[in-house]
Amino acid sequence: MLTCKDASHLISKNQERPLGFRERWGLRMHLWMCVSCRRFERQVALMRQALRMLGKRAETADDSTDFPPEARERIRKALAERSDQKG
Image 1 (cartoon, helix red, strand yellow):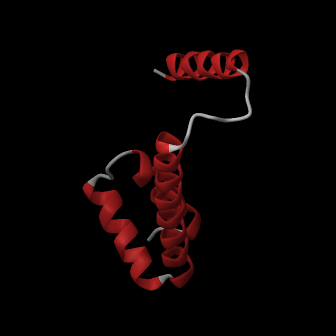
Image 2 (cartoon, one colour):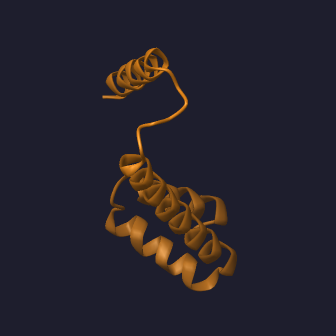
């Protein structure tokens, strides 16, 4: 039987990768019995949805920010470097 700590870890991992059969089964059994972890799973899903919506808004946002072009370029470079480090 999973503990709440194990279940919350699997709920978070499920956002990054598909869970294996045993992980999925254990998590489902725990969620069936644990109201707090079900609530946490809903909160994680809500945060993920909100972040997706925020990302879409940022993509379609007007590019007329208050940042000067030099600052925007520094930000773009920093983000590119950061994504290169992760990849």
